[in-house]
Amino acid sequence: MTALDITSEDATLETAPTRYIEGRGIRFAYRRLGPSTGTPLVLLQHFSGNIDAWDPAVVNALAADRPVIAFNNAGVGRSSGQTPDNVAAMARDAVAFINALGFSEVDLLGFSLGGCIAQQIAAEHGRLVRKLILVGTAPKGGEEHLLAVLQEAFSQTDAPDPRLPLFFTKSSASQSSGLAFLKRTQVRKDDRDTDNGSAVTDPQAKALLTWCATPDPEHAMLRAIRQPTLVVSGSHDTMLPANNAYAMFKELSNAQLVLYPDSGHGALFQHNEIFVSHVRTFLNA
Amino acid sequence: MTALDITSEDATLETAPTRYIEGRGIRFAYRRLGPSTGTPLVLLQHFSGNIDAWDPAVVNALAADRPVIAFNNAGVGRSSGQTPDNVAAMARDAVAFINALGFSEVDLLGFSLGGCIAQQIAAEHGRLVRKLILVGTAPKGGEEHLLAVLQEAFSQTDAPDPRLPLFFTKSSASQSSGLAFLKRTQVRKDDRDTDNGSAVTDPQAKALLTWCATPDPEHAMLRAIRQPTLVVSGSHDTMLPANNAYAMFKELSNAQLVLYPDSGHGALFQHNEIFVSHVRTFLNA
Image (cartoon, rainbow over all chains, first blue to last red; front, side, top):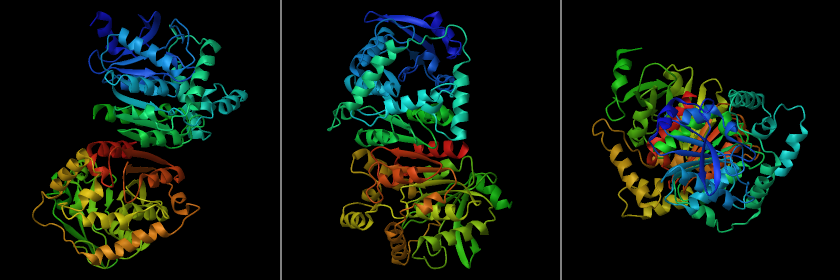
């Protein structure tokens, strides 16, 4: 444990320094929050997102009683390297990052594309992953409406941020919690993460589309996952519908399913307090 | 508030005296636990069950921070009257009981047949019901395999209690939690509830079968429910499958869905600690 580790206990996503560590030739940018002991919870981010796209309300609350690590995978934000165009390579890079930090056992929380990566890691590295949380994601061969929904969202030129139509439903309650979410992500002013545009989003989109276009009729990927898993989705996720979550729940050997009302892809941010409570109950059980 | 109300704060399901109150000409047997203030949580029991069939691990934990009322509907246990053969009449009787206690607003937790009754009450009495918890139940017109499963369970003459095959899966983990559940229900020795046999189970079975055999293609019943609802099911409920829970979640306007792994109809007893945590999170939100 270093002096830095100790000072990190009081840090928040908004105040923690961005750190760097090298693995597989990649210099990974990350922030570390929470206590220095306990099973670390590693966060795997969605398509196009970087560290600053996580909701401080979720990350800080989870870090109240466990180490939480937010990082950028290869090529994303201020991490070096190239963003691969497939989930398997993204999983390999994420494992290199986890190994570089010296962790022998972690919990994973994967959101959207990050949930695909989390499935791949859990299936391939049974000992490395203790518990798995899959949010707003799809199984291999799952249902996706990414391009149609992205196109519609980016055509809404009056939306202050594409995440309002992409992550939240059209109800006023959902939209207003979306605005509150965006505000929370904008509190940090200095040392913010970078947006690397199509150098990230092109290969990430290919990875996610390929994942969903690759049939897995025997559910080999899900059946290789033996870890306790919490599957979470919003009721009206337009990109990766809740049917994916129900299908994953049914095929996983040890899964709990939680679905939230009047919510889209960003259900975990909209229902952040309840989501944190559910994650805690799951991880502490 | 009476002296009895105050002493009930320390009572448990196993130690609380059985009380009686009259409404609609029926003398209802009930037990009251928990603090005297707060929105009372009224429990609606499953087919063939009485007050002593509730799991003390669930009821006592829920009563730690809210009033909890377990009761027998008309004709069940030591409640007087005839058990009706339809859900609407059972709902009418349950409302008479709630009114007799003088409650103007309650939360309802309905399990199995009790979940059908809870839906009917919530749909018809918008102001009486604040929040709704539906466990191991079905919507009107829902999927049921009651007779086949009951027949199989009662043919297993080696099972010490039909609830082991009916409420738990065949896995050793589920069966052993089933044995622990049965043991918890047997702690109370005196002032135990009665089992009135077919005078209860015949009309109750008819009510449940009729409920599921009555089509509700437009989901009028579910759409009349405006209260926040928590829908819960076990992954392998053989009598009222988890598909019912997913279908209810999709049609209800404000529902949260929670499904548990490796569990049957008695998922709430098998996963009692997690279930209590989820109920608390839901009721306190």
